[in-house]
Image 1 (cartoon, helix red, strand yellow):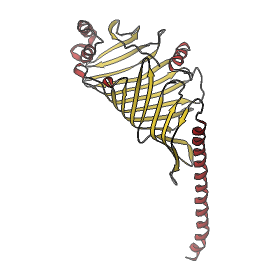
Image 2 (cartoon, helix red, strand yellow; image 1 turned 135 degrees about the vertical axis):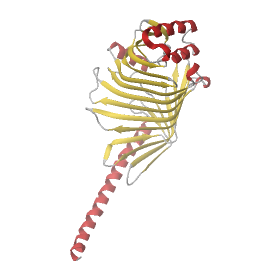
Image 3 (cartoon, one colour; image 1 turned 90 degrees about the vertical axis):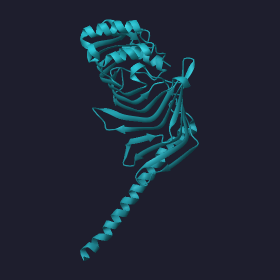
Length: 336
């Protein structure tokens, strides 16, 4: 018993010193984080980005260094120069011992406005979280999750999503040969109206692959043109669409043509493809007579009775082709 009493005092001193050292580290890390936010707000611009906010606070001790910014606003994005993002509350958090692993969240939601053509596209989310994941093959991993999303160019054409999940694997070496890995999942996509027999809700859309080539920090339309001219491509290792009875799985390559419109070549397996044709007719992308011809031709290819169909699918010159037959028009994209 006497022996333990002799050890208690030095152990207590060590514990007190450890707590004091950790507390000092927490305040040091917190002061650095807050000073950076203060400097950005005072300057009004960091690397071309314009930031504003009404109040900054520091908290989270002892488990987190947490910097909160109220009434945050961000603009001056190089690829979207007219965009403006606002959030009632922005929370930046990390552990004092691992400052490289951070989390950014907007627990009270956020909204964004983006001029597109002659109108303004809007985006809102009830919540958003971004964090740094584990490094993989000399690349940093970033995860972004958002829920309760509404996107629209006008109130009559709003699209709602239950959630979005995005994973990016950004290599340490930047340049024309970089390969940015990505995984994107959209859950519960609610369309403005019902599309034929498939209904207004797309259950799941998934993409996984690599974005190859350099995308300069310029207006998006200019950056994409440079990316295209540099031989940029998107390699889709896996794509999936689950929409009511329709189930589609595909893999292939996509790029941009001389008119800045998508062109792609996929190998796809489509389940219940007749329902997809009916939805294209209902959406105005396919004439009823053309759909009847397509059903006849695809039945000859081995997709009779609404069963699975395996076939090459291409997007070229604003058209969607199955084998060599035109299936539907591909919507024109006006890049901001």
